[in-house]
Image (cartoon, rainbow, N blue to C red; front, top):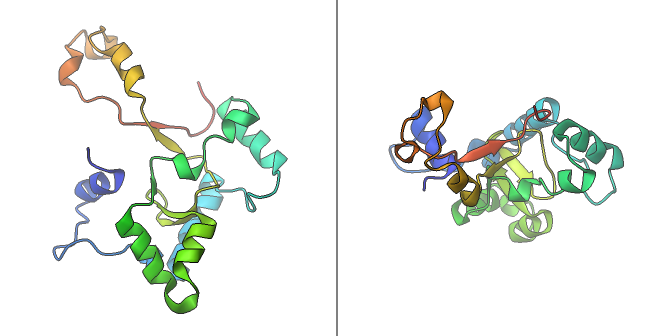
Length: 172
């Protein structure tokens, strides 16, 4: 199965001819901060300090998603389908940190990864309004072979299954 990153590169025609290189935000702190600010302003990326209770932040997320505060706290960047911690990406992040400090220690302490939606280095303990998850295969099986009015009863086995669930705004 293709990753979100691979799929987006194919769709956007963004593949380097010489092979894959590191995203700019992993190498340039200014680009990273600009992209992170976009995530903060447009998708409420946070909380600012995940080690604090952040009661108001989590209450707002729970209200927005119409779930309990405890459930909202389960939707973190670290379990978001757009959070990339593969070896190549972590190597890019380490390369970008360079001699500024012990890159491996910084990555481990912050549990860093790369947000494929907003293109910035992201901490696993935070979240945002664009949090996505891979669909539950058991849930998909419940729909197999059932008639779907939008598909006018066509055989659903030939149709691709939903890959992602996106939580943006309140549930309908």
